[in-house]
Amino acid sequence: MSATESVSADAPADGARPRVLVAEKIGDSGIDLLRTHFDVDLGVGWSREELSDRIGDYDAILIRSATKLDSELIARAERLRAVGRAGVGVDNVDVDAATKRGIVVANAPQSNVITAAEHTMALLLALARNVPQAHASLTGGRWERSRFSGVELYEKTLGILGFGRIGQLVAERARAFGMHVIAYDPYISAERYRELSVEKAESSDALYAAADFITLHLPSTPETRGWLDAEALSKCRDGVRVLNVARGPLVVDEDLKAALDSGKVAGAALDVFRSEPVTDHPLFAYPNVIVTPHLGASTAEATDRAGYQAAEQVVAALTGGMVTSAVNVPAVPAEDMDVLGPFVSLCRALGRIAIEVAEGSSIDSVRTEFLGRIAERDTRMLSIQVLLGVLRGHTEEEVNEVNAPTLARERGIELVEMKRSSVRDYSDLVRVTVESGDEGVLVAGTLLGRRNRAHLLEVWGQRFNIQLEDHVTVFRYRDMPGMIGRVGTHFAEHGINIVSAVVGRHPDAHVGEGLEAVMVITTDAAVPQAVIDEIVALDGFEAGRAVTL
Image 1 (cartoon, rainbow, N blue to C red):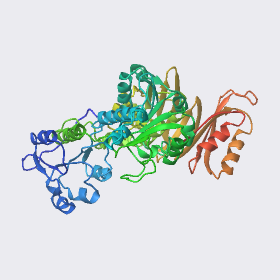
Image 2: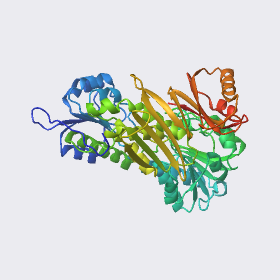
Image 3: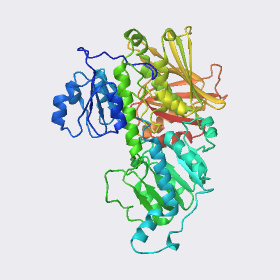
Image 4: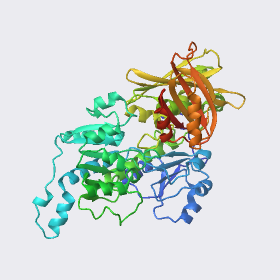
């Protein structure tokens, strides 16, 4: 189901209006909206025991973060058809259990983006002008004008790491102060940077070298945790000021402390921390560090907006309207799923591989091509799976089947789908192309055998056939003897076990011509980037990528 399709809903058997429980405090606007359609009970302050006893009476429930809708509670919710989460995440909801019961789970992903952007600007200004320190000094009985002289934002360079919704809002506001803005995010189209008059950094290192202020707006993933560490800070300009209103784990606290001690970093403003709540932190005593207790989403307007948006989703779910922020999707028709279902994991894997081997510094478009029998079906679901592979782990918010197209559009990424019922060599074929400017990279795959095993067929312009495993490594190199052995030797030295390997080369190539070839290897564990770098540095190797699917 796409974000523009409706969710069917059956009315209560007795003809009565559906009943909705508001289990936590939300704004009056959300409650008023619900009451125009349903009978609403307020269960703020209910104990878990009372909620467990009474949840079976309701068709929908609206919660914030305190209520834990685990599988035990969901099992007792016999009538429940919708869960509205008045906030961005759904960590307190067992989404899998809800999905198995056919319960729509929807959140309010846009409720706090303005608030987070404004808090970033508040900290940016406070950091530049030493506002909290001057306030504390004056209220403490001291008049110290010269001590708290600050710097202007005008004509300074703001570096934004992560250019999603919040990063883009920060850029708009910073430019209004006359700042030059540079941003790094390879998952944003070049056109989007131009629309916002923001310079596109080709790498994070380029941003570090240019920025007077750096603000983080990255998701928290294994790849981004510890992003701002000693190595990154060493590449920054002397006297840089750092802000983090995104996620605590993005910054290595010990490395930031050392950079503050050395004077490399002139100041920092932090709203989030590795462990929360926290009241005793090594940086709290620093006079050039400003801290707030995770207030990025804390405004009356954001709270009210979150409640209203969640209420809108509940109304849509119970009345057959458009549920636009569901984090789970009702099952597709059985006749379509029989054909398309086995291709879901293949399409997601192809999207993941395509974005990892793409060599541009931005994404302008993602093109999907479905050839063969699957082209006779509605393949939009499969295109969305490709987008999930491309975007997952690279956006501020959790990307899912419903919001992936919207997140792509916000980043200026065009999704193009093509279908053709004829295909050579295979019954079905899926091609994915990621384009950046005039450059594009194509990957292709199919399903083979009675168990529909996913096979990778093309990367970097070379064709082969290898069954996909969880860990895939791709090398591009000059076609000459001994290259496979060199890779195998290095993998063995690092204790990496190869499951399978295959080479794609030009069909007319001859030994000694040095034409380009591609080697694909699957392993039973992830290949560290350091090992890839070590191999690519060898003579004859041109590029290497390791992908965990």
